[in-house]
Picture 1 (tube, one colour):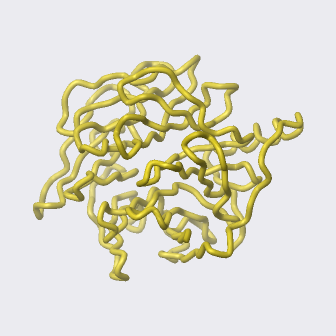
Picture 2: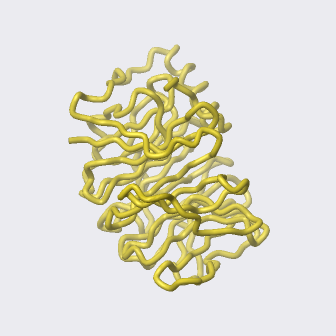
Length: 305
């Protein structure tokens, strides 16, 4: 499979900035190819269909993801036992970026079905359940992630008027609390929770205009920069054991899946043929991610032994 760079504006800008930094002689670790102990498997092979934002069920029995197989982006479920994928949402708007509830009873997602992009929840424990809206404001809300205790959802929002900030809302709906304040139109986005629920990792270009990963206490407080790499870094995912964060990075010149220890040490490249949107399996031995086929991204899985 050929290497492909991401076509979104943010990633293109990130790679361009990376080239500038490289020309300035900044120190950065050399890219590392997957180790012999790592195995990679393609899960879907629909090159004409866009598939993105995969995430394992808490029990590992299935993977949620977004797909435009029907001509519109909807949420689908792919069993990990080899059964066929099935569509879970169907509406005129776009349903994207699913994230499981911790007990596996349902999931939250972003949707434009109300006119603006907002956060919704769908119960899977009762057949025929309709999505319930969690956020309802004038701005766009996206990339939701549910806290380990299932009570809060963190998401990005531009409701503040300038840039994107992180906000917290009860999963059942209610008053939103602002967690971060972006700087000069910068963005804080694509957040994920530590397994103990005390810390949130996120992507931001608040420092030097370059996308990097930061952490912030879930109750608010000072930021800590996690990634020291000289390239675009985004879509972080905290490992189940709390020791590592997986993410996508343009450090090597193409977008690949990396991981790093939570103390900012031992950055490691896991893929060498492209990788985006990584998420850990419940046992922490695998990552599901996307890579570009001939026309669109498909789902892949890497096992790290």
